[in-house]
Image (tube, rainbow, N blue to C red; front, top):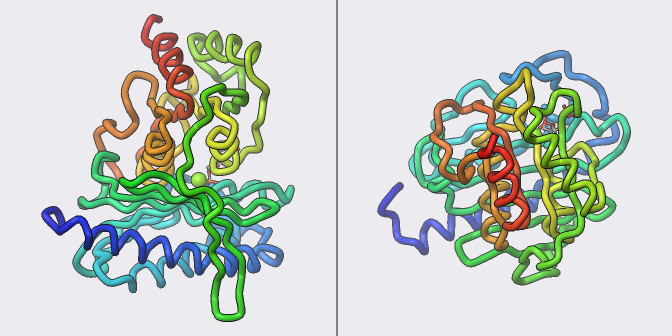
Length: 294
Ligand code: AHM
Ligand code: MG
């Protein structure tokens, strides 16, 4: 769909975001009875919960039906599906679903690419995430900036209230959250983490969307770094790292795989993993210095 007028691209992104918003209350309402394993693994080899299956099926049907969405991919599906002519949509239907049992935060992540999948983050034309916290919120990034909405069920569908028109990371960062076991962190990352933990407050909940929203709100740094036995970390480039990097960068922050901007990581596979570090630019600059100088 390259070469499509910007207004058409913006309209498709709006339609995709509408579907995500409309589906969020339904996904939320479906969680209580689906806190059990589905009995299958996803293409990344992880346990799939019943709620993952529900969210994936719901969003796959609805997003594939959006006019001018041409390709659909999900963290829960082996290969992208050709669904017509138009932009490519990649989703993590239920991010952090291992938090279901303990009833903690989860999210839904979407990236809209103007290129076939797997695509470069530079081809993103919009990205969004829903955070199923005490309130359901949605953060939407386009080339125009980042906004936050509150999403509530309504008789005729969904009520969306914009609560922040132009979200930017605060100047004075205060929080951090790093994934993976400390003994598995490479020494250079551990040394960086030791500095950061002496400066900022730990806020880690085990769902990327929840932890990133802390950073977007208060300023700071979230990472799921390279691990000794998993040099590409855990998070997936197409469904998680690229959309989150796009959102944080549009909000004035930075995103790195440790040596380069996440959005510049060459796409090699739909389920490719990448180390992700996102947040306040000064903290990501320091992270890159720490990792590159060793
Ligand atoms: P998921 O999309 O399958 O839930 O996996 C992604 C989640 C992220 O939300 C979170 O940052 C990370 O996995 C935590 O992983 P772990 O609990 O293995 O440390
Ligand atoms: Mg995820």
